[in-house]
Length: 530
Image (cartoon, rainbow, N blue to C red):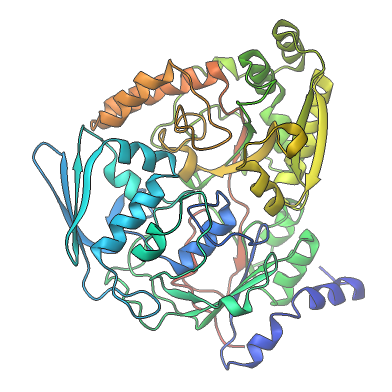
């Protein structure tokens, strides 16, 4: 693609802050562009993917998911499980250190897990099933369960929002889960240079010389996290065209999400590689509903939203044609994932605006205002939101569309307030299969009766089935229970889904060692000198 003078100048301006950093070092930094601006640095208080991306550079995890979806030790040397599976003894690898040189201890792990357990859906359930979580020496801690919990490793190795990253005990103990930590101190492969951070625009990281990677090769989020570049820059370019222009000129190396309109052009060039990861690494559009405020405290109105979300129209409107998009997928737990199911899918298989109108009539909906927060700066969410807005209006919803940047919306999204005080009713969102594929993490099941998020809900029918799933260890029985949970979630319209598709990430083919995992994995990447 030929760059116009205007585009070239705009690209240069957008990257001007980053260029002086290159001059300070002989090696060129690896630059990757994230979907939205980085505003919140705390992966526990923030539900945003950009914060998760940030955190994987800075922090590390006890357990990690590999490329096959299996859970492997990461910071841990290993674990022992009692015969009744109620006592888990974990031991850290030796010589792990935080970025300031202080040792990582079992006490840090206990404090971090407890803070995470006060925020995350799986974490809350694991902590509720825990009788005792204690450090027994500098490198050993013990989890004693009060009742069976079949997904301990799935919880500790949860790969996406919210990830149980490990931070110093003094920070974890001193900060409530919903409040942002003031100090960012991890033990991961890169060190965050806070003094260079421009919120919403760029963040700089340098290689952590103290990091001790595992001996195994890098595999998904597991294995040896070797930082093969000295410097990394996380950038935001709001204009989709500028993102592609910067990639083509070599100003940036990796786009978390490439603009869909440009994918055919990029795919036809050997200079660029398009992500291929599917299954759990795929993404799912959905509508986050505020169950605490009218009208979505009425199940019939929620079902009307479910009928509005035509997966074919949503994916076509965004540009995700097959095979990138999968409009036929009707599984709440993602198609191609371990708990994929068709149970209850007849409720959403043939969405209809006429049916949505009838449900609103049955609900007694009387043109009440519905506040929709529209993330206008997100190339993924903006077009989805436009389709959703159009179809909801056609169904008869009285929408008050409030467009803003995602960082601002994310702050409102996690707050409970009346509509006249900044409250909201509905937000178009996107989640990865890593979040959606496990029923205890799934936004339509895992938050049932937890009362820890504004989009929470409490359905009495879900509660006993979730409890049975929590306690079950047999994979076949868990899949059967997952099917029951999906059917109940569709009936209650807890989290209406709107279409599955593969991540449109793209990177320059000259990069070596890129791990195609569904979101940016920055370690193991080598960038050739120019």
